[in-house]
Image (cartoon, rainbow, N blue to C red):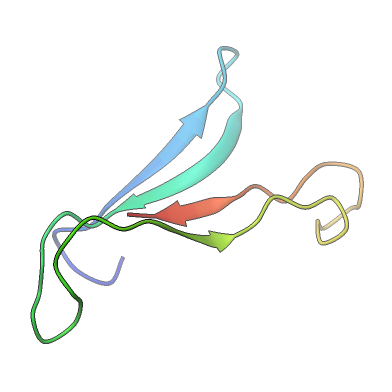
Length: 63
């Protein structure tokens, strides 16, 4: 992660399979990022861009 305050989470379904990934960056750092709440997609879910074309590339978001 890009800062010690950032937490990384794997989002799993009820069977324990990963369905997404999430970075949580809760603190404002004036020299690096604006304060306030915002979220963005880093990587979108995609079958076309997956490694094997049959299972989806899992999405990654940060907040």
